[in-house]
Amino acid sequence: MNTELLGIYLNDHLAGAIAGTELARRISRTHPELRALADDIEADRKELLDVMRSYGVEPRPHKAAIGWLTEKAGRLKLNGRLLGRSPLSDVLELETLRIGIEGKAAMWRALRTLPGAERFDRLLRRAVGQAELVDQYRLRLAPQAFSAPHTSGVDVERTFTVASSPEGVVEYLRDFARTEQWDPGTVSCTRLDEGPVEVGSRWHNVSRFLGRRTELVYELTRDEKDGLQFVGRNDTATATDDISITAGAAPGTTRIAYHAHLEFAGLAKLGAPVAKLALAKLGTETERNLIRVLGDVR
Image 1: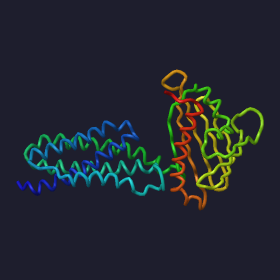
Image 2: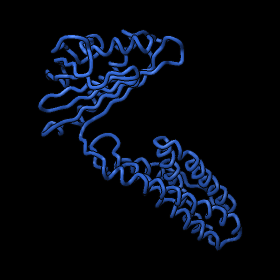
Image 3: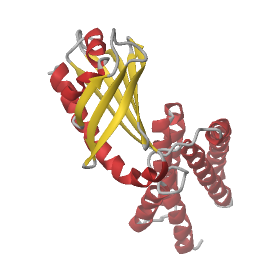
Image 4: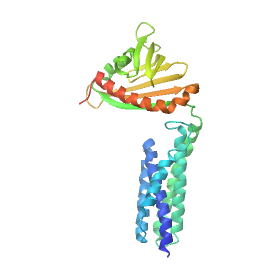
């Protein structure tokens, strides 16, 4: 047996196994129901290392680095979105994982020509099952991805807990004029109508964003005990603030999930990369300010 050539072959597949493990772990964070699949793929990588040891083949560190870098570079693929995760990302990632599993199955088939075929029969059966499972998810998600609405905006999300009751948090946040107290970008926010705050209530908001004065008219579009939504519009952008509110783990506390989405129109879309960075900074400051006004959980 030419162990030098076998070593090259197995180390090449080890690089692919490392990339596949990283990709499977990332997919399982989006789809927790696939964690068992990620565990199996990790187990296959360990089996490959054991196979290499049994043939006296040493893992080559530079091959491992190539596998790790390959998975990271795969995140840069075009997916129809300038920033953030596209609905197409799931389909493309699952297809990439499927191709990797096919490569692994081909390796197990080739190794079946060597002593210890029983082991490789078992690993091949597992690879076939993995490929079938990935295909089920891929084909289920494809129609959703292809029919997803086109967006060109940026998103920022923050989740944190404050020392106020859910009822108190809703009552405080539903009056958008109070953004002057917690939104770091707001210069002023004035109610445009009268009467009780309810769905349809509107505010004129003046903010500074990216060094420029921005004016939007915000409307309360959702007003429920477990969440609020405000949508602001002007000629160049639509801003949506989704705020989910649930009871915290400790009595008298509230878990807030804050999601800001900024959608651009026309030439303003070109500013999306810069806006993403600015919005992320504002998101962090917004979280800090809300904890300050609603109470810090210590």
